Length: 475
Ligand code: DMJ
Image (cartoon, rainbow, N blue to C red; front, side):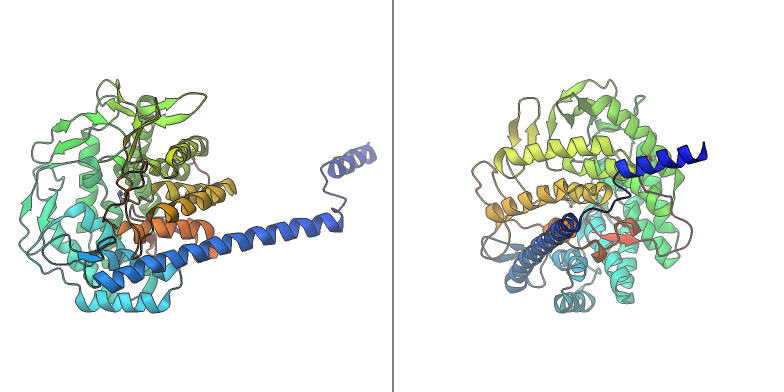
């Protein structure tokens, strides 16, 4: 009996190909194919790095010390009356990850010597948080330079008055010198995309106030969800009333959902996990348009769930990354296929598409990163080389359509490929970073040890207590 069992086992092993080693020639072929694949990826990563440098050199030459470069007129651009060094702060960790040591050191010097938040300017809380606070915190974690943390703490402290509203949801703008606030109508994305940065600041400074304020804002938005579990597009921070009840995963809401999931992963915050779970059920029930042919996410009335629009766009393309991170690889893969279909319609994705008719609704392309971000997450979480091929195609299209003499330019239209004189700082913080990380060796950054803020600044949990397990787990 025992002999028979051993014989069957041996037979199974042989059938599975486990006992007899593959012939040497096959092994050699396998190995050399793998070597070719690695070499090809290294070549693409190197090309991405060279193109990043091209854009950075343009900034250095024509806009040094300013917020951004105008890539067609080769002129500087500042968001407010004085520069807040948006591009250098946003780009610093990309340079570090790409191993651009000299550029990173020069940029860090510029930041520590010239950046001051003691300015009489009214800034957008959300943008300054995700780009500057996020960039300073990841820069600090990557360099250990405490001057970057000091700048982050100063900025965080100056942003705190924004939260002094009757609901605790922040006003859209706050003056960095006086603390004066303005614009009481905000949206879930601006109110709910703050906790990674403010929470990390609390953990690194030992001052709980930052975590508390940003968490309260997230919770106050959640508390105002509809009976079917959706949030609207605009909310008044003084009355707590929705002023626009359109619901989607798109602009003005998008990263509110992203932060619920990520704050659970980064801080182990169980409230965030519960809120994420409630919302993702509602999103899949009321916003998903799920047919055997494709998966898309549209817009609906937050109370009735009635479909309001069948539009999806460049911003929505972040969602496969979030789905994948939550463990829902099946939906993530299908949605990424849809996003890529959208990209391939005109060889660069439009800002907005009607997925029912496949007609472009808004033809602009702001050099957005989301679709590349999702390819990177999916490749890291599935190992499927299809996402590398996607990345290569998109990068070739991106260079062909958007490269200029001085850097990279947004497109007024993906149909005509006419360029616009805009190079947002997120191109250097996110788009190039995700293209690079997708193709570079995984050793450049341990994907499982970081949580990216919505501006692609990787945050490491350097403080104590155990992170929740995130390997292939349904959150
Ligand atoms: C970036 O500033 C952030 O990724 C934000 O969450 C959405 N918009 C841009 C990129 O498209």
